[in-house]
Image 1 (cartoon, rainbow, N blue to C red):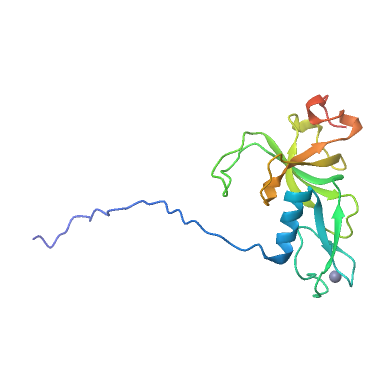
Image 2: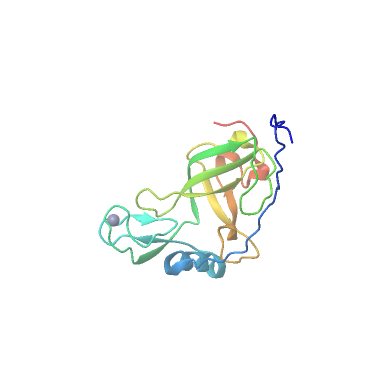
Length: 174
Ligand SMILES: [Zn+2]
């Protein structure tokens, strides 16, 4: 045995762990997801003190720190507050799949929203150049719903300025 040991080769064992897990959504998020699945409604809860909506709903108003017990339906139409056009997609952490690019995701203020509670989701916009702030959109629900955020398929553009439906979009933002 030599004392001048050569650099030791490190043996690496690569493993991908897959751990099936189940979490309770709780009464508040559970109601939100149940409404998506069973009634195709986007429900926010409302603070009894300041009147702001929370979407997705949370048990307590983050500002007043009181229980938000009232519920109201928002949308399903609304207006784009902000959006991202994604050209380089990373795999979805929930599905492991990578979306085709470019795709658009947006924050939309649903009609009836009080306060700062936009809903984030994908936007069906084959031509991203038509997307702009203020554009009218509508929530489109998936045909098969399971009580998940994916029960909302995406937003669709309903703004007359870009034609009915993104498929008819003329291109060129205004
Ligand atoms: Zn409040």
